[in-house]
Image (cartoon, rainbow, N blue to C red):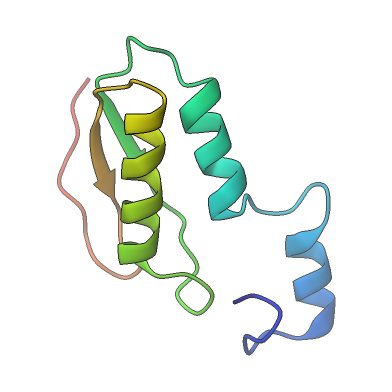
Length: 88
């Protein structure tokens, strides 16, 4: 989505670079393989309003949690929408 999105090429290069943003695939690899099993709530945020979609993120992350044997509650914080308040 990023490659065909509305951002200038310089921004796309930065986001895709080694120190850029995580792709859904990379985030899900982490969830599946490295997320601490004691995690009770996983909040995914800072989603691109133009190059991602909350439903895609939720589906992918849910599958990664299940594949990794994790039972954390999943919350996807949507761009421009106030999320619930979290107290830990």
